[in-house]
Amino acid sequence: MRTLKTGIGAVITLMIANWLGLQYASAAAVITILSIQSTKKQSVEMAIKRLIASIVALILATLVFNGIGFYPLSFGVFLILFIPIAAKGNMVEGIVPAAVLVTHLLGEGNITMALLFNEVELVVVGVVVALLINLYMPSMEKDIMKCRHNIEKTMHHIFIEMTQALRNESLQVDKVMLKVLESYIEEGQEAAFRYANNYIFTKHSPFGQYFIMRNKQFQVMRHMNEHFTKFFMTFEQTEVVARFTEEVAESIHGERSAKMLLEQLAKLREVFRASSLPKTREEFENRAMLYQYLNDIEHFLEIKQSFRESLTEEEFEEYKKGYAALYFKR
Image 1 (tube, rainbow, N blue to C red):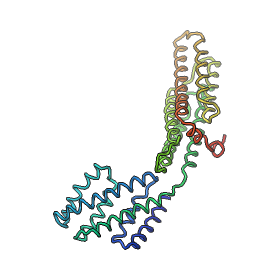
Image 2: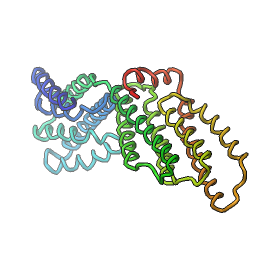
Image 3: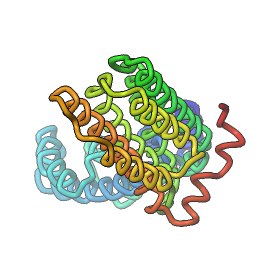
Image 4: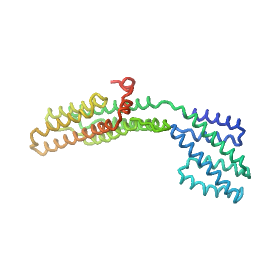
């Protein structure tokens, strides 16, 4: 889509510049090519920086060329002065198009107001067409929901594996699924970034917060897997932990709230505290592993609860909107 918009934008810019009778019309098309970005906000920021940088460059070049002359050395002096100014003013993106405009002055060997206005018009036409072309952006919501579905489906799968590992006294879960989960989260964070930056003004959206939350939970899950060993406990204890792990898996799809599970976990801790004290070193180490495992699950749930509490009602409704009906398949 960006490639298509770049091609169309460059042609439109060249036609407009020629229609206006501007010299060096192709330079305006190049500015359009450089100004079409992945998001609307990036395009606006880029357009403003390039316009300001070009005006500063034209003023500075006028002073340098009129003072030294229209020589290659003069262009070098201009660059030595202009590049630090552009970098200091956070206008690095405007250095190349501004330098191209200045070469027009150098080639003419004479600076007139008409020529300066011509160069400014080239920039204005180039960035305005880029902005208009970039008003159309494909909706990112479908991509975001797809990423969300993949993340939750994979998390659910990993917790179910943990449940089975507890019951079967396995040593760990499949690390490949953790790698897959990490890639889904990275993809989702990128999609959320593009979504937020497709609004010129601030767009309050839960999507960015959501993927940050899932990334934090992923770090906990990776920690759990690294320390996930079979518990040498009674079957009853193992089964209780396995059932709770299974409920955590189901909560990922929203069937149980994190708050409810945290309350349930607190009661589960009380049950284990009330059980008889370890009699051997092995029993003590196993009990310590159990508490560490429950601590990790508690942290996992607290991250989700903190995310929910951070959302306004409007954001929470957007968070839920259309997801179950369109993308969630059990």
